[in-house]
Length: 616
Image 1 (cartoon, rainbow, N blue to C red):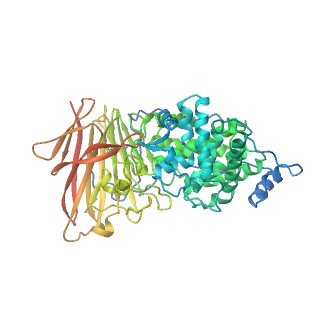
Image 2 (tube, rainbow, N blue to C red; image 1 turned 60 degrees about the horizontal axis):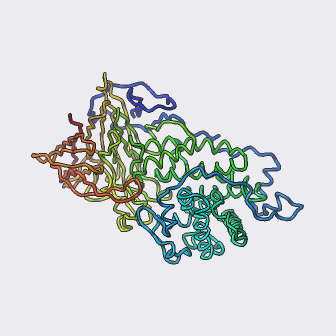
Image 3 (cartoon, helix red, strand yellow; image 1 turned 30 degrees about the horizontal axis):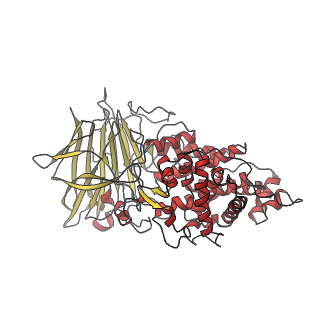
């Protein structure tokens, strides 16, 4: 078995922490036999250590407090057994570390929520959840993520009445927590945990009014939600939801009276949940950049709660936060915005930058996030992202996509080849009915057989059987003065059971960044092909604003970029142009075009070469 090669190229050009890597190797541009059996050996820049998930060291007394609280003894009894329980109040004011979106906050002041381009009148919202809202709106409303937007839109004295009015309507519809999760969208562990955290972080917006009865009601809701999370955090929908629940518990332990037992209980649970959520290279197991951002945001807000009470967060939380950032940066393009992977959209650079700045982590993107599965190649001003791993397991997926061996490519910040993205924001301007289609293989820049997904796409964001194994080989091709290249080769077994064919893709990006050469191969599994033919389609979804003109021979196309540059696409076969859709930085649909190389291929296998090159 050959060793997986992963070597730094001279033009990587991304300043950050040095990562020890091996020596280079010379290789031909296309070598079909060199990586027939690549291994999964990894040389990570920073693997997670057991110490990263160790709860804070406690004395015997604190261990007893945590145990007693876990067994159900009230925190007030444990914190101060010889006095009356403290009156409900907030122990400190938190400085919000993550500003919201001013436009969305202005919309709330005008009377409606603005989510992915859709305006929803607040007066028509059913806060009780009997009439289901679109999923994105549901998350914003019940998690109270809108408080950050409202805070960003105007001075506090102008937004406090609005926040209190909306919160009062929500409390009227949700007077008390249900016995267990699932009793309406407000009472999922994810929404309840995030809501508790947002209430505490943005307390000045909801506790600054003159109505003492309303203030007492809000503080009671905070206490009730914290107690509900104590009992139900173990019933979370998934691991990321559980982390949100634990963050709400720890924040309540820090900022509500008699909270020390709850804090000790919450810190141990949070660190354990993070250990199960985060893979060895720092990527979360859903393989979702949106989920990665959510995990970072939760920890950043929780750290602000520690700062408010002048406590240092556990070292494990800081270590995990430092590990979450590099994989997210691996999916940024030259303009700083995100690639469209696992249901995500091309999140705007300003939003990504604000999150990274709030994290305080200074590092470089990981190029080879092996367990998370995304390869990154930087060649001068070009960036290549490649999905070289199976989709996430069904239990981790929220918007799981059949995107194995898809890629995105950009130059000077201009996206040239993209994936459609946006299934996680379906229900905004993107219709809900498109959600499953946007998760399909055909919505990604890769090969599909017989219009079938390489991995089954199921309802509610889940995925089924399909790709279970991906073999990866990465190597540097030596050259002088930017004449070398980085070669990625990967294959998956998603079509073996149905068609007896393995899909292998080879991508070669030259060091000057102006030529991307590719080849898609279909190889009979077991070495012997079946009789007959099967339809194939290789799709290249093109970035926004690109004008396309087919060549006279039909085997290529000219691509005129918005910045005036010109690229040429050539393929060994007939190329057609079709319409497509792309979710922009705010999750709104934009019309784009796609190049499609399609036809029939023998079940004995075949290969299809193509080239994308900058002209002039």
